[in-house]
Length: 112
Ligand SMILES: C[C@H](O)[C@H](O)[C@H]1CNC2=NC(N)=NC(=O)C2=N1
Image 1: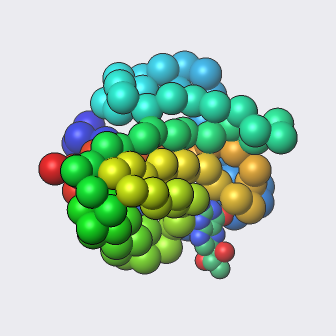
Image 2: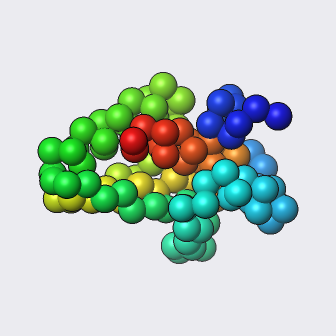
Image 3: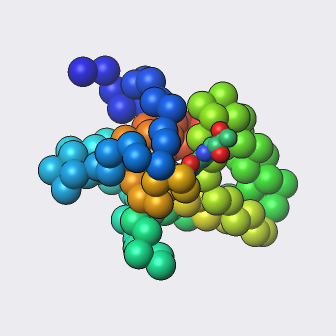
C-alpha cells in the first residue's frame, strides 16, 4: 500500500462510508501530529501549524488551498499571525472519510 499522501481521493458523497475505528488507528500512524476532535457530533481532524509571521502563514494557507482544489476536497482554514489551524472532515457525510486522512498527510507535506 502506497504512503497515505500518495493514495487517491475518492469522490465522497453523503452516503460514503465513515472510517472505522480500526481504519482510524491505522491512518493516524501516518499523521501523528493531528488531533481527532468532535464538534456538533462531527468527527474532524485538526492540526495547528506555527510560522514566523503572517506572510508565511498565508503562503502555507494558499498551498493547502491548492491541494484542496486539486483534490476537490476542502478544509476549514483559520489563518492568524504566526499560525494556521487546518481542520479536515467530509461535509456532506458529516464525518471522517479516508480522504480526510489522505489530505491531512498532504497538508503535512506542504508545511515544510
Ligand atoms: C460540489 C463539491 O464538489 C462538493 O460540495 C465538495 C466540495 N468540497 C468538499 N470538501 C469536504 N471536506 N467535504 C465535502 O463534502 C466536499 N464536497
